[in-house]
Length: 551
Image (cartoon, rainbow, N blue to C red; front, side):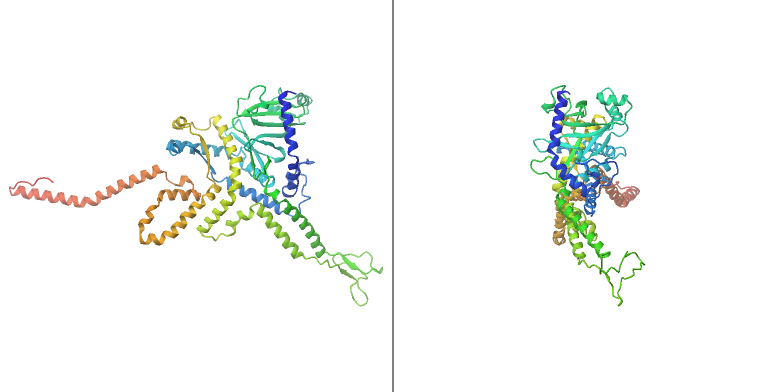
């Protein structure tokens, strides 16, 4: 075992030990919110086994799916472009060549991201579910290396991700344990680079035997791991075979391939806490209440029977149409009566509904249903609702943009740029030294800008009486800028709007058309004047008088 492999194994064991408390917490959450993912401290016996024995009410499961769907539609909607490439230098950002380059780069990036082979949409949805359930989610972006599209995505289960943060609190180190068969390991690393145990399994024909590996990614300037061959990439990568504690592959990345998002974090903690962890007491209480209510309802519908012990009844049957002799006395009075438990089922249902509302609030379900439940709102009311929603979502959603989506896009951009799939930058961009930045333009960004639209609409309502008296007041507004701003806030595709150059060309056409119209309108008068002048010249010439001077 080399010194580097020993250091990697030592740190991996340390990160595992530090996360043990989270593992037990996440296991409790998973068993009640996402049973199929409950593999933090237990290993499933086989694929497809049932794990719902602790679920008596599915409110939390449904709320988690709605939360993930809301996150997906708010931050990464697959039906629209939710971010754009911009330049951080405003002096050149509006140049037509720079703007075209940014738009072309954005289009190429989205084409690769949403290619069928990339599998981005489904993996991103899984990541949002992990954010809701465990507060921590990791998306791995791989270079497909072949084919027309270069990107491929994989959502890594939170149970299989161990992280460390830098001095700013951002995740910069990731250890991911996984299993490979001997055959798959030889395919990925090469038969000449796998460990002796794997080679022996291959030679013995045991190609499906599984072996444990760990993928380690960290900043390349971590001195603890740079004692041997220097890493010539910003991010160092090592594949470690755990069985024999040997490094089977090493290399690097231009950008971190692991994008880890966290819902909220507590001081001193590297992992996030999600809505399900916050609502866990209510989720457990609701399950116990549902279990109790089920028993009470069962007793109410099919109650225990009370019978007088006189030895008359035997083999009493409760099936339909059964005849039980001795069930009544000689007077026809029942000797067997159902037991009245006195259970207050309406109260139980009301208490359960209260818990369901609390759980839905924790998963932001109520917030996302505001616009759905009130479809009859006016445009102004809808804008106010969107403004409120944007203000409430900004803290948690904005974190996903900075921690998960930002590193994700940087990794995608680095892969496409290294493969020369992006057009060369304009000369002015290279000479200025300006940097490329990400501008989010999706539904969340529009919600956060809704206050601008609300402010404009309120202002228009207030100045309408004044504008009636003095229409010059409305000239204070720049109509073109107002139109562009409202279009962006309301999500109008930019290709539906004409550019400034196209508008200038239309204005020039209108000017030329107006000049032509004026000429055509003035043509009869000019023609008549010329005709009169010609007649006057003819008359003067016939009379021997000097011809009038030409006009």
